Structures are given as structure tokens and as C-alpha cells.
Length: 405
Ligand SMILES: Cc1ncc(COP(=O)(O)O)c(C=O)c1O
Image (cartoon, protein in one colour):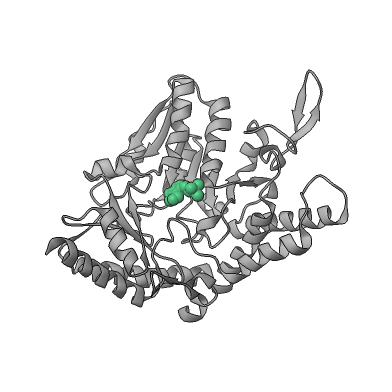
């Protein structure tokens, strides 16, 4: 694969950061955007913009069509059965809040159990905490093992006849562990327990096929898939999309409004209240086309190669402790360097134009489990090469020189 050519499609790499070429190892946080995505948004605002789903004038019809065409592309990309199963939200956080709120309101009662894992991002814990508080439910955490992964047995032993939903990440945004989602779904469906998958790190880096995965809900943040900010997707199986109550009320989501009664439209409109992130959704259509132009299988293969090289390279440095060693790993490496605070690591790296993330990555439960308050995290995208990893390795050495000499 011609990575230089792929990278040249991202205008951001033409800029210098602190006088140095940008080395971007923070795609798990948010990926960079190819020119086609940026241009599509400009074109939409320049030539096609109107609010959607309301007016009948030509621009409104064009804009509505472009928006709905993106829904069709998403449906095809994730292999959903029905377009009603594809709901646009502002990010994955909102997608999970939607399920926690709507599902929780209707189906979770006092003493019921919500099963999550110790790997979860706060986005897949805090919304369930709200339901715990509101309904008197119980949240159970499936334990993460020393490798930084949660195995099927850890889930199995916590399932009871009070388990109302299982909500799990697809890939840990700290250890990179790939969860055995299919096995968990199979186990859960024997007991008719729905499964929500936080697909934030899965969707950009794995083949995601709703028919193969079989989960009930799948949450995506499009800005991590080379797409614009402000767009998320909730896949909700039709059987749920049909019966869950709306999440937010307002324009666009109603059937009929009377003084003493209100009815609601069907999914997806039922869950898409108010003026939507139209330009961003339309822009996202180009992100999917970009991914498909390379092929997700090629993306996976490339990232795997760079990940293996990265692990091998940085483990050679004795000062580095890589967090977790999952058997199946996505392109994320969190680490600490002996005696250096992760924020200092990130600051030193930044002097050389190298962008990583430092902190708890919205996973305080997992960091507490690992006995550390924070870590540094390097994460990959399609534009990364072995040269970027060599730069990472040099930056680690520089850090040691600055702080540990
Ligand atoms: C695993 C995981 N879940 C949820 C989120 C939240 O994504 P967003 O802030 O785009 O809603 C993130 C973002 O880092 C993540 O990595």
C-alpha cells in the first residue's frame, strides 16, 4: 500500500507543528480528515445547504436527499437490515446515552442488573450510572485480567436472571484488547439479554457487520473514522428501534401534537429531534468512501504491521511499561515511562511535532485497576508508517534524557 500517497490526501500533514513535521499518533482520540471530506462539507454549504426534513423547496429536498443517502451508505457499510436501524447522533456518547435513557426508562427497574466491564470508557459507564441512580439498578463490572482483556468467563459468571443489558466495548481504548463480542452476543441471546457494543474503537479498525456480530445496539463516533466531528451513529436493531421511547423531544420527531396528547414518528426520525448536523453527516459519506477506496481489510493489515513493529520497538526500551498484553489487540498502545508523568511525556513529544494522548483516557476504573493514575497512549491510523514509530522511539529516549539523567 502506498501510505505516502494516502497520507498526502490529508491536508493537515502539510503543516508543521512546533517547526517539525506532524507525526500523529492520536487517532484513537480523533482521526485526521482527508481532503475529500473537508471539500464535501464546503461544497454542501456552498451549493446544497438547507435545513432538512421540513421545507419543500428545491434546496431543502436536495439537502434532505444528501443526508438520507448517507444513511443508506452507513446501512450498507455496517450491513444493517433496515435504514430505520441507523440513527444519527452527535457522537458515540450520545448514542449510548440514548440507549441508557430510552431502554433504561422502559425496561430497567429497581434491583435489575446492568453488566459492563472494567475496560469501559466513561461514555459506557456514566450513562448507566444515571439509570442506576434513577431506577435503583445495579451495575456489575466484569473483571479485566492481567493482560488487560476481559474474557468470556468473566462475563458469563456475572449473568443472572436480573441482567437486563450487557454493555461492552468492542476494543479497549487503553489496552487495545479486542473483546469477544460475537461470543458474548451468543451467550446473551441464549438468555434473551440485549447487548450494546461501544464501537468507538472498533468501527475505524475492524470489519463491522451487524449481521455477523448480532448485537442489539452498536455505537460509533464518526470523527474517529476520518469523518467530521459532531456525528455519531447508533445502530439499533429494528425490534428495539420500533419500541424504545424517544430520547429527546422537539421538532422533527413528532407524529401529531395536540394540547393533551403527542404521538411520535417512527425510527430513525423519532430519535433525531431538532435541527441535525446536516453538513457533517453529508461529509461523513466521503469518509466511508475513503475507507472503502482503501478497503477495511487493507487498513487492518497495515495497522497490524505497524502495531507489531511499534510493540517490538518500544518494548526494547527498559524504561517503558506497556499497559496490558491482550491476545487480540487493536492499534492502541498505552504505556508509562519510569519516573516521568504522562503529561510530561506528551509535552516533550510535542516539541518534536509528535502528538499522543496522556491522561486516564476517560477510563479511570481501568487505570485504578492497573494501579496508575494515568498513562501515555499512542494510537494508529491509516496514515502512520514505521518512520512514525522510529520517531516515537527517539522521543522516548529524549524523554529519558531530559527527566532520568
Ligand atoms: C471506547 C470509547 N468509547 C466512547 C468514546 C467517546 O467518544 P465520543 O467522545 O466521540 O462520544 C471514546 C472516545 O475516546 C472511546 O474511545
